[in-house]
Length: 477
Image (cartoon, rainbow, N blue to C red; front, side):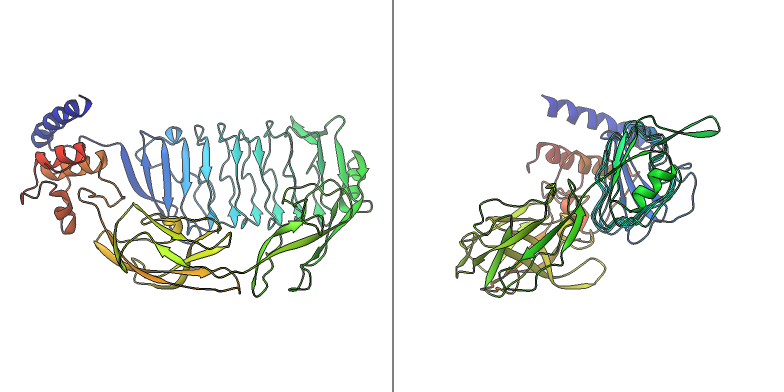
């Protein structure tokens, strides 16, 4: 019944649009800001930014001339390829609740999330090395991670974030400016190797024209460190913590990671996984019987040695879920690969050419220790980006054993094609395609080329309201 109602609504809309020559559906906005293109859907509240490299830096009000209200944005998605969150990018997005920041981003820019009152939690990628002035100032932030590569947190980055009541600073942090003035913190553990701490960085609140110490605030750190120096200078309570060490034992199969030293009760930094020819690395363990597994995030309270567990590589056979060497797959659909390797790390890689004509060789699409391995063609996280001007691209997929313990490989050629009805090439034929087709029929927004072929759902050689109905019914008539 709902489908029938929508069909009648669309029929009415065709007439109205033809007469008024105005757009009926206007809930998706696109444009360019800060050197990035964007798409905003006001039904879902999702704003997506696309681009490569750094966002444009200067712009105090980047969204001033856009056609939608920034208060309507609830989710912001920064796509892979963007490497900085630029100055004022989401400043005053008071309805923003969720933000997705991809790996590769190194900077959270000045006032990037200032006054985001509804933003409670942020997950920073491992690549962030700097949080700039006022980055989260007066936001609703309650929980945030500080990745291993972070080196600097700048002035008033978390000023007046009263919901922020606990933090875990990373061991490689070097400089903390007056970043945590007027937060909800009552104590902090400062890593032993921090090189500089500015006045009022921790344990102070601002009132009127003055900064005042927080009653009972406690600084934890290593004796003789910058943490103790800061606490004594600021007249705050200092509690010394023991320094403990962590060594790594790889059973002589490869070079072991360097020893780490950290404060008792804190975490260590992540190390690169070791590789040994003919073996698969399983994980680190507290004992050489491999009964008590170490997990990153564990609090280290005493000197430890972590032991690498290895599994010997065993031969196996890879099978596919198709009968031939060439397979058609619709853009947006999944293709499943199976392998009977027993509990081994497999790597799925590809040789392909992207929409800009750049050739990619042996690029990783997925790593998995369990099968089947599923690849979604059109999913950007696998770096397979297709041009809407091309209806098919040949992609060669290969199986590889991760690390030096290579066992076997097999090639299969995949022909990626768009679905019938998928006019906007997003991987599905749905209401959005029906909206686009309606605009084409009414003359308000034309499309050409292969998109016309995909729009002709009933294969009668004409583009009309029957094709809209077919898209909404998700079948050909």
